[in-house]
Image 1 (spheres, rainbow, N blue to C red):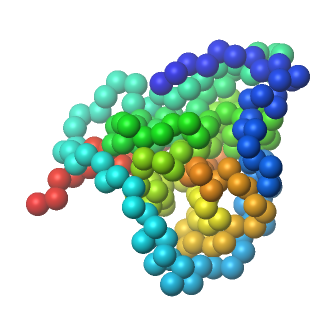
Image 2 (image 1 turned 90 degrees about the vertical axis):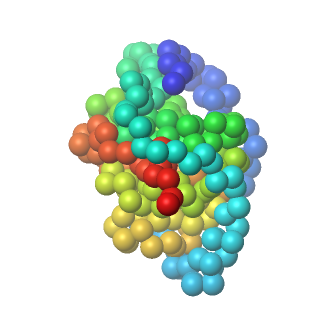
Length: 212
């Protein structure tokens, strides 16, 4: 994974954000995700999600021994005080598995740290960044969503106007507030605890068991 040793200039913060998001915020920031929950999706809407998920399946592989560096994500420094930050290792593992299963996927929309955020995309008191966004192009979105739902560290997922929260048993609800960035990206936030951040539990995206 790339190591980022950049100290963002406050005058250039806007340059570090997307420039094409004119219809709403691009990050929930410090908002309580519970306040973004709308109506629960109907069975028909859930079925429509399944039908729309037509990305590449990805390679089928047996589970293999762990690889060195599988939990390492981007890291660096932020602010004039050059505060150290790192992507939570459990999210480093997530990106590792996604990249191995879909090596040709589009990574243009991937995001970890957002210098102007004050939510999970910003380092907490431990320096851990507890959210990542994955570009939707070139992956199977619901494979990633289901893997996140099963993972003990996941707190909530947002994609294309839908939010899944652990506090609501990961049932799909409509998302309030726009957040146009999450129509082209899968947003995953983890539980803000050290044990969740440092979890080495596999996400089950790659390698995956062969079907008989």
